[in-house]
Image 1 (cartoon, rainbow, N blue to C red):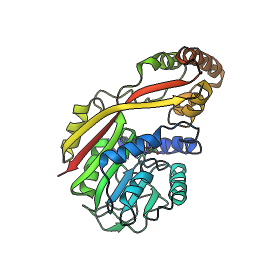
Image 2: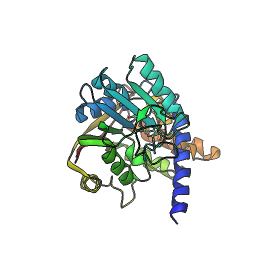
Image 3: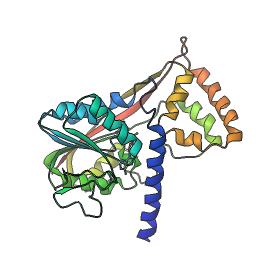
Image 4: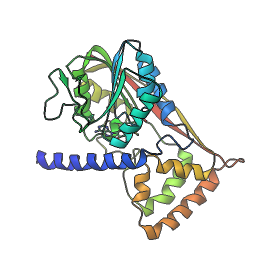
Length: 303
Ligand SMILES: C[S@@+](CC[C@H](N)C(=O)[O-])C[C@H]1O[C@@H](n2cnc3c(N)ncnc32)[C@H](O)[C@@H]1O
């Protein structure tokens, strides 16, 4: 039974890696600031300070990793892990562009952060990807902070992941997570109009037992995993699009493209027309569109 579940999970992770590989070339590169802003806010909330050793799980193109590496400075170290080779390649470009000598990014499964073929409990290891993180210590209690920016809800087993981060953190170390609160209700008609045409999970459509269904449920999961003093703040995530065309380009640069890829070719034109009609209703006088969703920042302390 568990083998079947794990096979399913492996398939889901492989599909997710390919999905983000397709997004990688344009992710946060279409003139819409979204993830970079959230990344800076997560690092500020986590309170990363000079000299810290930081693990960034689901590092993507470096929206969290870059500000974390700046905060940790030349005496610190930041390790990013992501399933998608395309995202990791972009993160490495960012590391080089910003001259961050103490930051590295690796392909691997951040849910377990184990060395290839190992159990992750020994000292210097790799993080389990083909581009293994040679020379990275995954010793228990060897990190000051673990950061998860808009990534943890993609993991099939967030509880297992949290327990693993508790193991990797020093006592008193911080686990800081950004995740979604409610989407902007003014945009509901856009998603309602598109819904009949495609399929695919939305990060806002969560199973009843998901730890992301409420702040209390999330704090309970963290407590089960060994964390204390969890605190969550909810803030606005304001995303501005110059016009409807830029919104479309942006959707295709994110995981949201999965829904649009699922629409059969012969239905796509109708789906686009249905959504464009709703986007028209949201336009400001200058044709811009603004979404104000809620983002949550949770910080917990490792006991
Ligand atoms: C929405 S992106 C966020 C990336 C980055 N943290 C940011 O703030 O822009 C989610 C990322 O999580 C990664 N991801 C999802 N599941 C993962 C897993 N099990 N292990 C490692 N990375 C994972 C995806 O490949 C993707 O790059």
